[in-house]
Image (tube, rainbow, N blue to C red; front, side, top):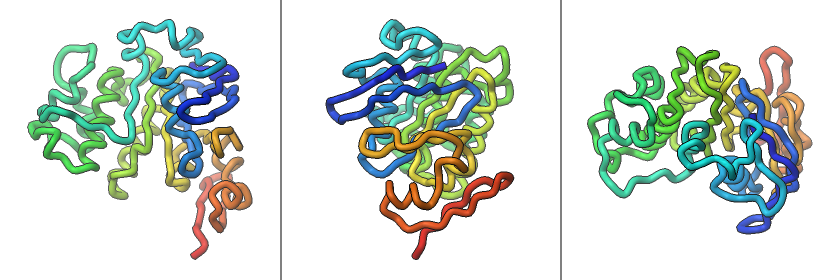
Length: 254
């Protein structure tokens, strides 16, 4: 689906070189300490930044050859700080950019628990409410129906930068279950920047661990998230409980 072919970046952040693939049917977590380059990498993947060298290919086509309209139909990005200059009704805000007519997909509205917000203005929302509304807008932009994300779904890429940062524990679980459901489609890939290693370990098929602009490790959570590696990269003492059935649980030493 997406290829990073020896990409590097020098400004505003030194990144790479990276040579990796993101496959459809996959939930990928980008993890690493603050300033490791996770958000910068997401901007490269999305096309908002151009690499200094190398190439990003989406569906076998150089990212720079897509028109803005074509790209908007195939990939959507939710940034860390999504704001609006106007007090759009939530219903209309979600519909911004959608290519299909009619209401936002009801299943997305219900899955993200925002139906009661539809008639409110976006400027009245809390941080967590706005985060869920922006995620709904991105999914709606791609016309993804999680109940029908099968062979009739066009191939697309959903990119989210710290999507759980403003959410309570219940909403975190709801969101990650939804993203897991979306990523089960053979035509959809979901990429999330994440700081909660336990969420990444539990829900992600694969993680990329970044350190100072370079890819320190790549693989399944059970392969990447070991205590020594986490200690070296994050400077934190942790214990890791790994089980091939239950996955990985990371406990911070207090």
